[in-house]
Length: 89
Image 1 (cartoon, one colour):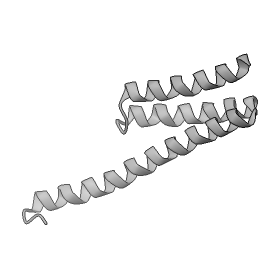
Image 2 (cartoon, rainbow, N blue to C red):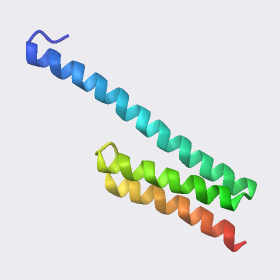
Image 3 (cartoon, one colour):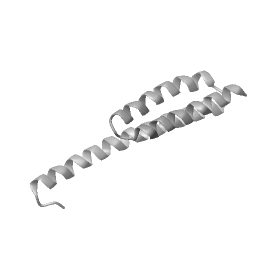
């Protein structure tokens, strides 16, 4: 436990930010799972709709430095590739 006033403040800030970042990351993972579930069930229109909202959340997380911008691009690329592959079948 910190004794210095500034260290106490930093601890409080990091706890708040950690919670916020975790919630954003969990939301991204949930959206990605929804896209994959829609693709596997064969609902391609639904998958594309969920993909749009997922990519919006991923981009927002990357712009806020919750995740790295390359990780955001990779996530979106993989999800769109799954949708395109399902369309090709």
